[in-house]
Length: 418
Image (cartoon, rainbow, N blue to C red; front, side, top):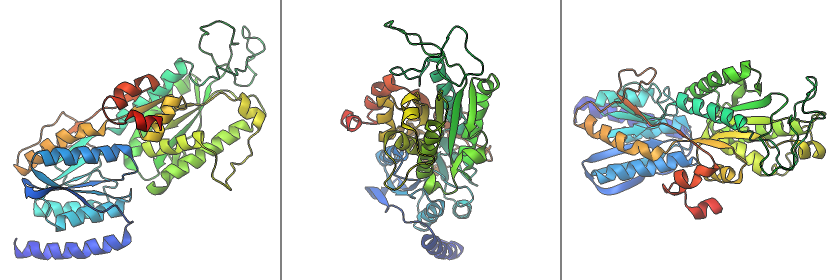
């Protein structure tokens, strides 16, 4: 190690101490393997609260260990400053390479600069943000997620999901609907064994919920979803009553508050709908983000916490008449999967993050051998020169749970049944 590098390492230690004092408490490092072998790789992921990151961490650590590396795996409790401190500390400890799922490109600027100066490769996992000097990215593209979620919602509308099959609200005359009548299911349910899907007399009222206000990656998901919904909005099939613009859709300023804030926002929307003086029509929720979806599911499947009553107070008669909302979410956390299985959620857009393990490990080997990693042509905004690969999402409905989640080992039958 050169004298210059020694001085830089010492400065980094002081920076780590400062960041560590300012950051949130995170999970302790977990190491895989017992020797340095082919090298030591740091892996910095957002949070164990998200099943996607939990599975990704396990898969990446296992893949690297199988190739002879030792792994320092850390989670940042969804705090960007903590993650920056962890990455800087990994560099100080002499990691041969660092894999990071970036929470904030800005917070990672200083450790990324140090890594570049010391010749330590950095590879991005999952979230493709413009982290300066990153040599590779194995990502999920937020635009693909947003488009898939919007399409899943439109498909659910076309299939008539969300209509109340047990207590429908018929119109007085389904052959001649009154254009001034309030939103409701336009066709009466008859006694046939295979009734046709309900056709609403008016548009579906949609609430769009998104993540933290300053999350650039989630903003890209939102923009793609809105674009995919534009024609349905223009045609009058969908009216976005809340969340039409990013500033309105974002539920929190702090990423740590997103799930709770999404739950509270959803409870208020449901309460407002139940309290309306007219017969409520169909409503829908588009939950853009795994943590947003967790909050949405909590709001729809549990009572409010003690001492918290949504305002205005729901009317029991309105609640009884209201068709169940159409809900499209993201991810496959246990609560989300159970809600999907129970019919509370119509669909969720799922990415098996374990599929990121092999390409990121291939890239680490290439970078350490001073070779350019293989790219599939994916481009990261702000990092157009960095080779990258993308893993695509799939839309999961109740009928897909066994094939997509259980047969692959993402969940066990015992976990799903609770």
